[in-house]
Length: 369
Image (tube, rainbow, N blue to C red; front, top):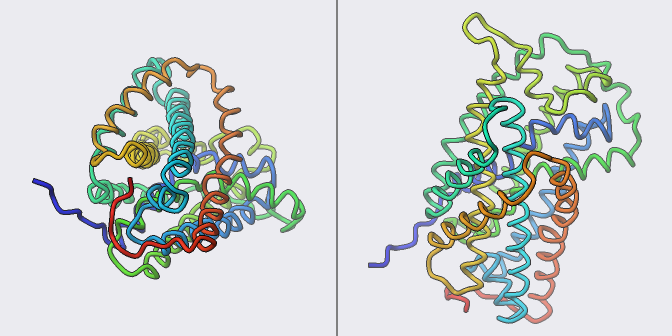
């Protein structure tokens, strides 16, 4: 018997976007932004929030034209079956690349900080199968997990109070000394760290409520993440001197490492062990999105079996790649960074324009084939 479709609530949409955006990137963000904008890195992070809001609004405007369809279904509806499925196929390839990069980043940081002697293939196996275990479920179940995982974000905020016992505001003065060119270059770095909001490709269509309410919730989540990231970057910039910050690739962990209690000596290791849960939400997000793309291209009813198949394919693929050397992955990261603007910003904007030019709108239910 076919079960009725369960929509997620507006508050769950907020936490889905929040958890999809926050992941492993936050740990190194102060270091990455400082290398470009130095003491003005916190300004770059704030401005990147504006960029994310603009991208989210473009996706929402397209969704409003086809409110009963997710993004992939809308692409096929607007462009037609042939061209539409080609476009969706490119998205699948893109999200596969992002997923593999995310897994490589997880393995790299876990091996360097916690499990130095654990074979990479074991970590990959655990991460991919754990991601697949949840990604095969409905969006409603994924949303419930994301709401629960948000508790660990507030734990990090509490822990970040400790480093404020030893700060120096002079490290970020004078404000704006790096010039707008470097600040805008830092915006690029911060925007890439905030990726994950593209989960709205799927989530908008499956969320209960008015379309205007969904936009407000999505933008609210984007702003929350931007403020949160700005706080982390600002904290890193005033705790470490400019010279020190160039030597610590994960400033958040180094700040926690400096804090110790009578019963907990390495707070950074305890935190990272717990932070694996929020980190893995990113891999769940991308595995779920790419499986929905495959589902639309091949006209499947359910995505569960697709997730299982994709998990096996992705596992074999990444095990054939150099996990012990992160340099190739760093190059892939740069490529993905620029491709993100195309797939998250340009194509949705062009698709929105096409929907107006050819008067393509779909306000009733229906499947796309």
